Length: 247
Image 1: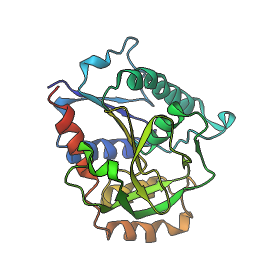
Image 2: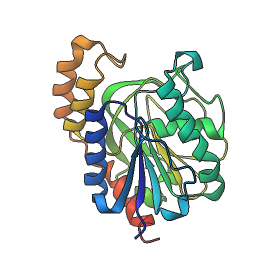
Image 3: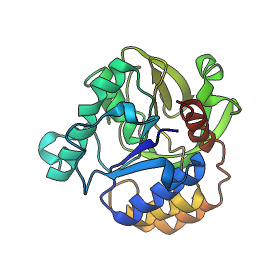
Image 4: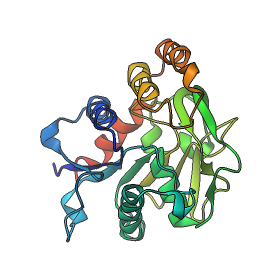
């Protein structure tokens, strides 16, 4: 099996490492089966051959595609430009891709510039009830996933309208575009398929001053997420690996 390329965007090493371990655990991959690149530390190879990989998984991060360019730090701008620079080839060649949270903003903006904003559909840190569309029920990445399931969310921006060429696979009442696909192999989720209660508690502690919630609410939110039974979304990662890992 060719390795999976895991691209991570989080500048906080604790959050990045915890996310990486979660991606491995929930996908049932081990370190020998992945090539991990932390974009806050390393640049991509100058001539990155995407054919060497079974697929690409992009993690989340505290940045927002829709932020004003002047407000982005040099690191945030470099990370965003790096990911955006890969999308033309990924989409044109329909290379297996799964973008988690931040990946929704990246894919949405690539398909329809300006479609991602903070105008509507931001969601506080919570476990939200998601629902499959008819297209979602027939998609291999959502096999064995119930029509209604809980997923962890917490985001300031969202896709406002379905991007050009995309199919809506999962929606929720607060946010209509929880998972989309373009082509046959390029996916993005607004929710976090790798996250469980303990992992989300770690992020709450790390990002409590990043504007997702009032800092004084952190302890209550940690207790809340640790009491949630969120297990269904991780199947998306396993299905992604099962579908493309045999390439």
